[in-house]
Each structure stands twice: as C-alpha cells, then as structure tokens.
Length: 286
Image (cartoon, rainbow, N blue to C red; front, top):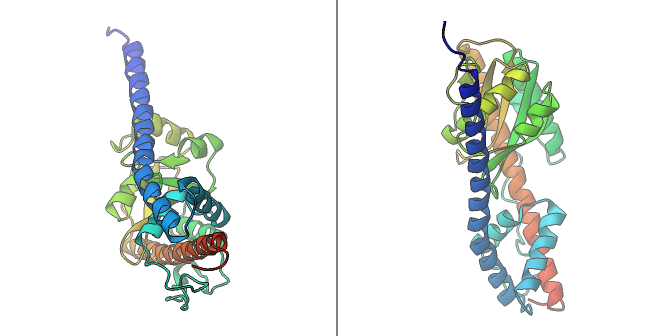
C-alpha cells in the first residue's frame, strides 16, 4: 500500500500559491516604476507650457483632470507627452470636430450613436456572447494600460470568490490573459486539466462551477486588445462550430472598435479639461 502523498502535495500547492502572489506583486511594482518617468515628463511639459510654479502644481492639474474623467493618471500623462502642443492662445486644444463617428455595433444588436453608453455596451456584449455559446456564466474585462492588466467590469452567474480572485489579471495566468496576448479566441476545453492555469486559479474556477471557458478578445481598429469577454460552461466542451467562431469574431471586432473609439473621446475630453485648467492658471491666456 502506497504512502499518502497528500501532505507533500499540499505543501507544494502552498508554495505555488505564494509564488503566484509574489509574481503578481512584482508585476504591479514594475508597472508603478515604469509610470514614474512618464508622469514626471508630463509634469515638466505642463510646468513649462502653463508657467506653473513647480512640478507639484502640474501633478495637481493631471490628477484633477484624471479623476474628473475617470482616466488613469498614467494614460493621461502619456497622452500629454504624445499629443501635439496646443496652437497659439486658443481656448481649445483640439478645435476641430472629432475625427470619427461611432463604429457599428450590429453584432450585439445596438444602433451605434453618440447616445449609446458604455454600461449598455458592456452588458450587451456579455449577453450576446453567452447566447452564442449557450452559457449562463461569464464576465467582461477591460484592459488597464496603467497596470498592464485586465479588470472585471461586468459579470453574471459567477459567485463573489471568483470575482474577487480574478478582479485584476496580469499576463499569462488565465485563458483571458492568453486571449488578450494572442489577440485571438481562446478555448479551455477542460479547466481541470488545462495547463494554462495555476493550481490556485484552477481551484477557484472549479469551485465557481466552471469546467470550460471561451475567451473572446475585444480588438481595436489597430488590432490591439482593449478587453476580453469570457463565457464559462458547467461541463467540458469541444471545438466551436464555425458559425459560432464567426459570430464571436464579429462581436470582438465591433465592440473592441467601439470601446477604443469611446476611450479616445474621453481622453480627448480629459486633455481639453487639462488645457482649460492650465489656461486658468495663466489667467486665461496660453
């Protein structure tokens, strides 16, 4: 009769979990370190452009515009460093009309207009994805450029431990991360055996009642991934039918382009607000 290896296996599992936690911490620390020079560069630009007294005043303007428009500070700072300088003494940074109209959202049954809101799009992309796959559980994640990670913004049918555990997902740890990195539909036929998952992640997914999942990347017009929508199934699955693959591809392209368009519009508004704050510090001139 063989000895019971359970204690050794438990010890290995604990060590793996600790290693995963340390890797996640290191990932976030590296993101913070990369952000500092970029933000400092943006502070210098604003300090010179609006004749601010110091870098702290420039940081205050960045923070106000960032919070008001719900744009990550690092993302706004990067836009400041890359955008052309405002011309002359104009009251607007971008005086011309917005260069694009809303992309279509036919794949999720929405008429794309300027009035369509982000919450509706996120809700409907999840609903349509679940309908195509016949699933009852799923979530939508949006790419956070500042943290270089995916964040859950919409979910249904998943219990709280799952949502809390996968609230922020870094590179290479799950099927959604794989879909984002490869910019292609990713299928996990059986969560219990697929090597993409670490043991801790696998356990959380199985406890949520998921034995298979399909992750669809949401791709902007340049092919970059702006988010992922995933459907979870209660049983192991086989390959998808070509019609399902085609439908999910249309969802990923259309919704990804719409989200990219919407984020660019919000970022443009944040830059205009920043310009207004800077002009006010100059007494209305620039």
